[in-house]
Length: 131
Image (cartoon, rainbow, N blue to C red; front, side, top):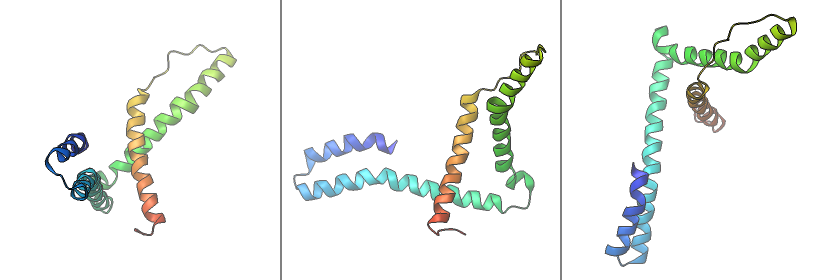
């Protein structure tokens, strides 16, 4: 939402502020506001993730691995196992009923979101920010 306001607000600066240095400084502040906000949200989410991972209950700490394994199994079925089963059954002359199909767009949205978080964690580890 903040990014949608950056252009109009920067345009208003031209109308009301005549000093070019002050205008440039304010335009920069407005432009970086969305980035700072997103960074603060990401930091807050990392703290929540850390608290969840340290929880003693499997229902709190285990949901993320469960979703990851579920996505991994569905991805393996869709791209590896199902084509192999179809090929092997066709080669053997066995007629199979229609195999289950997954909505890969929804699955990949969840998986990429999880991998993105994993990528951020790897980046933090490389920079020495976490253990």
